[in-house]
Amino acid sequence: MAFHFSLESVLTVRKNIEEQMQLKLAREQMMLHNHQARLVDLQDKRHELSEAIEERKKKPMLGRMFLFYMEAMRIQELQLRILQTTIASQKNIVEKVRADLAQAMKQRKIIDVLREKELEKYLLEMRRREQKESDEQALLRHGRGIRL
Image 1 (cartoon, helix red, strand yellow):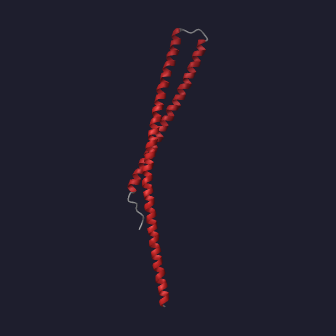
Image 2 (cartoon, helix red, strand yellow):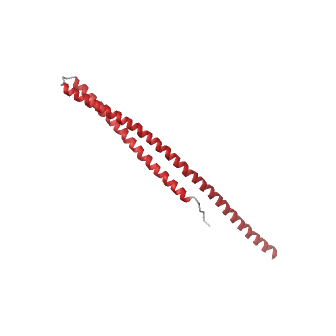
Image 3 (tube, helix red, strand yellow):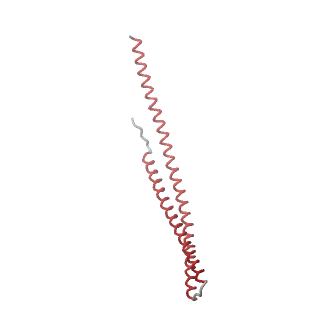
């Protein structure tokens, strides 16, 4: 008689849910990493633009060129703020998915523990049966030896 866990299908479903949550967390973390990399890139470009403005200020500059640089700086500042807000919201999403994954892991672990307990009971019962059979065989052998 082989071990059969009655909730095996539930365990399989919960393992699948946990794997899906792990994949979702990985995707969300990748998106967060991409946003952070883009933020660093934007900050570098803003710094380069700022240095370019400082270099241009050392020489005479047309008003429209100055306005062009100032508008470019304003746009980059706006992009930085938008990206920082996006990163903050992405961090919240990652934390929510991480909490969901922890919950899915707990749900799977509950069924795992139940399975382990049932397996222990099954193994204990099998040991008892084997011991009983062994005792019966020993009794029969011992009984035969006395009768002869």
